[in-house]
Length: 236
Image 1 (cartoon, rainbow, N blue to C red):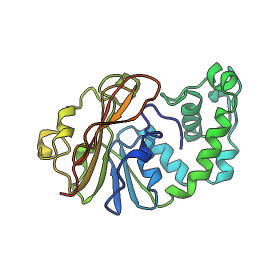
Image 2 (cartoon, rainbow, N blue to C red):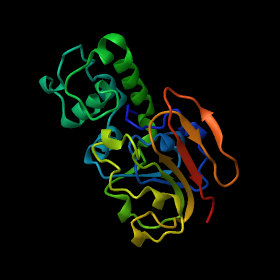
Image 3 (tube, helix red, strand yellow):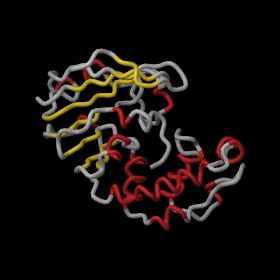
Image 4 (cartoon, rainbow, N blue to C red):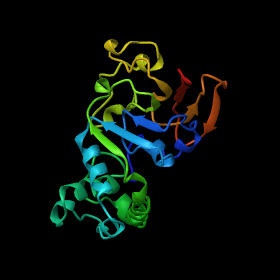
């Protein structure tokens, strides 16, 4: 729906399909996995209020609302425009190329990629119908009840996560790799249903491992060098 650092828009189609009607993303971001399987019951959880505010605003938008947003010129500032706070946050991600919302339009999004804003807005407008039935929760993964569902767990990058406003510095990443850990340890504990964990060290070359039935396989070479590990715990 909008550009976001660490979004899985290229990898999302390669993850296993959900086996349950309910999909829960405890580190929602822009929820690329859920956008593919949007017909399911979707619950998105994020502790950054900006993310939840944008999702709730989009849910109530029409295509006309999105397509009517301004296309900024180089040097133009969102703060100078008559927009709601949610509109400014949404547009801020677009002109900020997925990082924390910016106020001033850069050369990259106005001169080098002059059609990027229009393309992103049209893409968002065409996907609004997908999210009308979704549920959004402002909060931490630690507060979630153990519910039978497909859990798509995509925490912030372990290295390079400084770009996030809500970083993963306080996350104990090994806890996400062990489905048997109790919730009291601070991890997600044993989830009822199926877990798909995207455990990311750095945002560069992407490698996926379907631990339960395939050896490590290279899925795609993107622009740099990094590693993503996908842990599918199967049905528990």
